[in-house]
Length: 114
Ligand code: AMP
Ligand code: ZN
Image 1: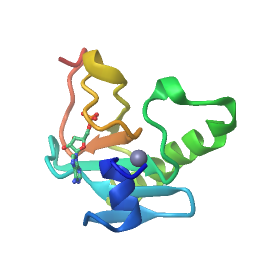
Image 2: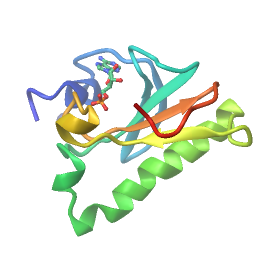
Image 3: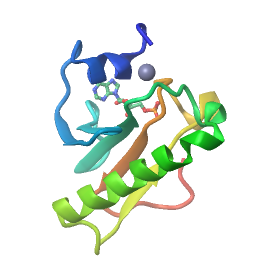
């Protein structure tokens, strides 16, 4: 999508601090980190929200989690722990409408979230 910020990052039109890439997934550091490690994993296919996911996207969504799992191991935070979050629409705080899996690590996280 031409007006999507994360599609522009995928296309190289906007720079990003990339930390992970495979055929289907891109991972880059969040521009406004809320934890010592804050990475966003996005599908290279534009999908606006979780509400738009289709059955054929199941493998792609799995790849987001596997990318996060792999990067957590690379960072060495897998044993200590990390949080994976995907916000959907306004009440959950979604601000960029291209699905993204937040990976937060490097500090304790409370529950429930705010
Ligand atoms: P959400 O609120 O769940 O939609 O998360 C969107 C995230 O994208 C926020 O944590 C922002 O800090 C992050 N973000 C926005 N623009 C950029 C950018 N150009 N590069 C990296 N992260 C960004
Ligand atoms: Zn997009």
